Image (cartoon, rainbow, N blue to C red; front, side, top):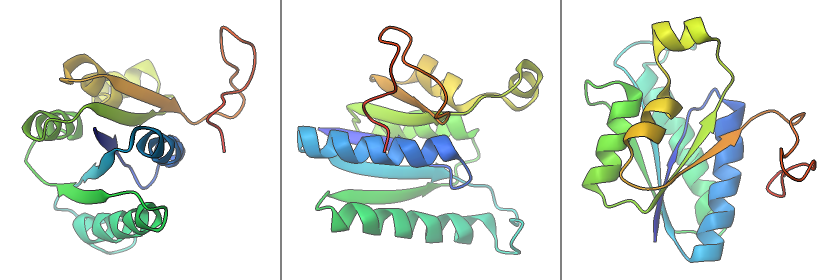
Length: 150
């Protein structure tokens, strides 16, 4: 099995998605592709976004390797929206599952900026597992916190 996790180094939900991906990789003896999308611009730290993203991907990959999980990292700079880049990558690499963090964004924010998770959910060639960041939200059906919280 091959799992793709879409990683955003500035997102709390993305951090939770990584933890859940580790659990799935161990349970299903899966390999993991950790991908992030970047533009050729400068980050707030004065680094080109690509360099900052590559450093973050390397750190994440190290934690997967230390857990004994086979993984690869990919910085996607394709001239597409981040959602399009992730879906294209998933199609090209026969991914079996995508894990993506979802953050609460206003309707106007989604209209203006688009929604990475929404695009992936609607266009992905495989099942998509979404992970939300909020610790406050309860499971709708069971009234309890998620069993995947760390």
